[in-house]
Image (cartoon, rainbow, N blue to C red; front, side, top):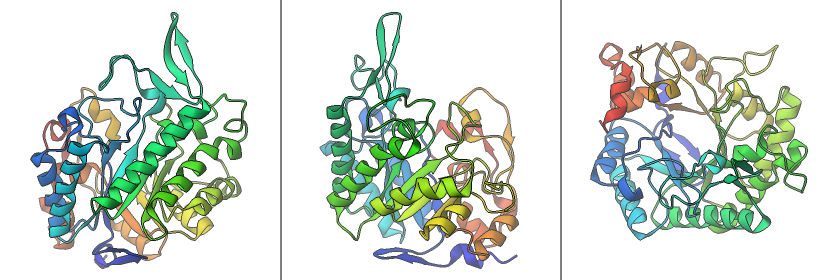
Length: 368
C-alpha cells in the first residue's frame, strides 16, 4: 500500500503542515533546572529534518508551583526556559517543520520532595492526607483560577516565541483528567458530580487559552479513556456519551483533538471498527490525531520506564494507512519509533522499512 497519504500536506486555518506525521509528546527528563539545552534543540531538529510535519513537544510544565512531578522536565515559563524553547522553534522551522508545546500540570501525581519546591504537595480536585501529612491539596477556587491563568499565560508565551499552536494535556490521569475522572474527582461543588460538571475546569481552561491567543492560533486538546493508574478506565462507554463529553470542549475552542489510544487499531465501541480518533472526528467534525503503538510491536511505552529487557520490533503500517486513506482521522502521532529512530518518517517515505531501528529501554538513556 502506498504511503502517499502519510506525506500529504495538511492545512487548518493558519496551521500548514508539510506531512501528516506528528511526533507524539514523550517525557524525556533531559532539561536540568527546567531549561531546554542544545541537545534538546538538536533532538527536535533532527526529526523535523526527516519528515515529521508537526512536533508536539514532551510535556512542559506551566507556571504553577505544583505543576511539575518529575526531575529534569522542561518548564514553559520563565525567561531562560522560554529562551531555550525559542531555539527549538527556530531550529524546527528552519527544517520546514511545525511545533507546538504540550502544556502540562501533573496535579495529584506530584509528590512531596519533587523539584522545584520540595515542600509543595500535589494539587488535585480532591485532597488526600496520609499519616497526618497533606499529600494532595484539594484545590480551592483561587487555586483553580491560578492554574487556568498559568495555562493561558503559557499559551500566550508560546505564541510570542513563534510556536505554531499549543497542545493542552488533558489525558492519562494528570490534573485536567483528574477532574474528568470520577475516581479522582469527589467534589460536590460546580466542578464535581456528573461528567458535565467534572468537565467545567477543562472548559474554563480552554476558553481562557483561546482568549489569550486569539481566534487563529491552533489549540490541540489531548484526552484519553485510559489512565496511567488504570489502563481499563473509561470516561464514556457509548458514542452518545462521547459526543456529550466532547462537544462542550470543542465549543470552548479546541481546533484539533489528539485522541490517545494504547493501540490505534483497537475499536472504541462495539459494532464499529472506528478507533477513538475516528469516533471523535465523526462526532465533532474537528480534525483528529490518532496515536498508539504506531510502527512498533511489543509492550506499552510506560513499561520501558521500568527494568525490562524487552525489545519492540518495527511493525508494518498497512492498517494505519488503510484507515488514513478512509479519512478516519487526519494526522498520525508516532511515539517510541521516533524516540529511537529520528529518521523513521524518512525511512517510511523512501521505502527503507528494513532500516528502521527497534526500540528498547536503552533508547531512553540519551537524546538520539
